[in-house]
Length: 265
Length: 169
Image 1 (cartoon, each protein chain N blue to C red):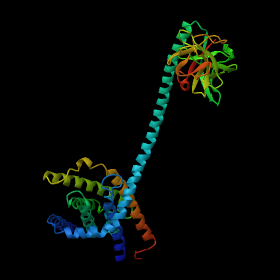
Image 2 (cartoon, each protein chain N blue to C red):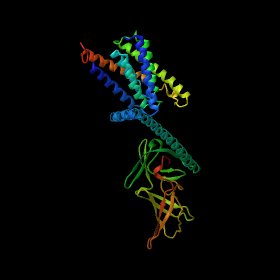
Image 3 (cartoon, one colour):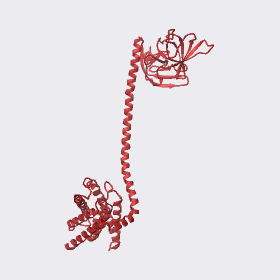
Image 4 (cartoon, each protein chain N blue to C red):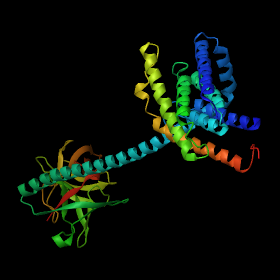
């Protein structure tokens, strides 16, 4: 192919050329040639560079997909934890509510059955919650249902073997015999108002009543003991010529957040 | 003959342009494809002189676009090519893909080794940059891409030969 001398001669020649190029570069003589070369090839390099960026983006896209997947997993984990936390908070709330109810019921020596709310219904005249106890545990129509520290929320409206419907006292069709906690034990009838609040009607005009007074059950109604809290007087209306006064009653608990109740038997 | 020269020169220049358009480190670093191209060109032409010319062109071109000191790549490539040529000139069969792949690997190893040493020497004179810590990051990519490039160019060469394109009967 080549003889040894020829090969080494070429190696020496090319070495000298390379050294020459390096020297020329550092003394800036080669710069115009380099500039010309880079300018000439720029039109080809621009699209290629863009292509390389595209490839790099593809790599990044892979990373992004990984991140998105990880993010979704973390979101799922967070959701699970929030759900578990919510369940725990619910248990704590329910426990607290039950403690209050049991304390109240035992203090008043009332027989009771606890139940969980499993469903809600809200119609034009009726606001109903469904509980997970029924006839099998002795629940009957008309029994009062309380929540919290003896706050009346409604009466049993319908009952089946294992469930019962509770008509909330804020329903339009709900009527409860009540009295105001004052010296006169002023009587009246509590009627629901559109599922939001209540009104106390048939309050004797001569009785002096004040705002913020507590209204309780009067005990004259069958199955409903005296002393269950209904609400608080908010606004008293007295019309000239009427025999009775009327007052708005604000519930003492949020009916939309009920979870555990007790049925007084 | 001149048509073959032009064809391989075009392939070679294309590889140069592609190399400098891509990054210098990582998956898409193709710098050593040039070495492959050079070695293959040498073998296809069976011409040491032509190989040295290609070494000079590619080295200078790469040095222009390189972040290293000018001349480092050209010198490293030149040294690697000479070393491999002297080591393999009596043993390599230019018609065997395995021999060519072995040659490619040898060139890669020598090129990287030479560049490392030269960079270190330049650094001692306080005007070089320290590349040691990033040096081996892309060597596996280089090997992989070079093998691919070798197979590609070898296939073209065989295709041309099989169809007697540019080859004298």
